[in-house]
Length: 393
Image (tube, rainbow, N blue to C red; front, side, top):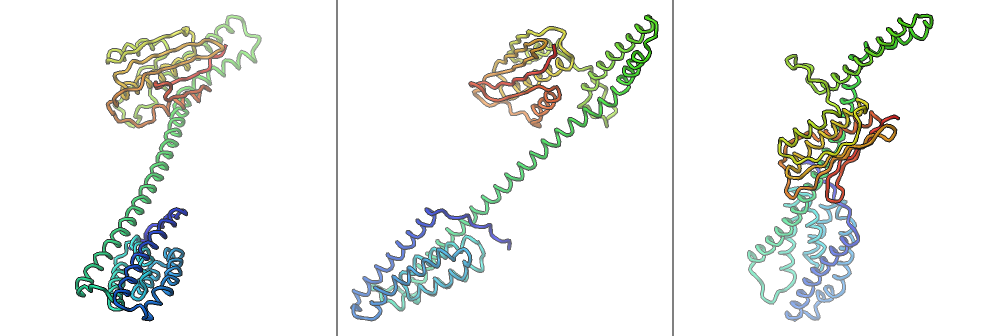
């Protein structure tokens, strides 16, 4: 049988209420025993002196041993205190505490041994100490057995709760580690795909630009017509590189292992933002667009603005389908581009559509690669996605 989970460390209050309950139980049995001795006429019997003087001192000693050693030596302490209950009325409280603590380990053999010892000791106690109205042996054994079963059931339940709590904590830690691993893998995969596709597609164009630029640097004796021709070649290849970059971003998330997938259209930019808003409105989302950026915004910045807006509108449709969305885009050269997409928090939960939870993570990677910042969260009863992207003067 696997080892039980370690018991949690007790606070001073945890020790206190356990000791108080054990003392109250011991005092109850002690008082009943003393009353039975007096009614039986044993006031001058040596057993009475033992109950009045020796038994309380023994109880304090046993209780101290139980508090200190019951977790290190649970079976030995439970058996020892159970045997003492045969002659000591005040050992009842410490024995009950030790038996309940042993039951938290949930080991059937230990429970049968300790429980059986407790029942036998209780029957011996019935024979040693007189009772005003003694019960038949079978009735006394039944009552003691029922009491022991209740104590064992309580301890067994406590042990099960401890094991369940440890299991839940282990699952939570495992889930957190797996989530961190998934996030790290997603970031690495995103960067790897972008780097690989950019290298494969842009290396040829950039090499042509570098070659012609080097020719202009070293051949300052070229005629003006040839210089213009080389400059035109550089310009054309630069534009082609930008176009290829759009193509790369368009197929980054395509499954390259499936040859049936056709390449997507070039990535949209800032000029496609109104069409995106109209598409969202066509699906039933109320969108207000306020745009104050010129058409000469850098292509990479425009694409990032488009993607931020697209992801925010998608999340709004998922989690707040009945709420209006405000899209604010502004800025200019030198001050950068500011994007803010917000919507009120929904009164009812959204549709609960499944998602990988990596959309905002991908936006963080895009914005970080441009040297910008991206924040998202609840502000004043609204969920806000806010980004700031650089735009050189």
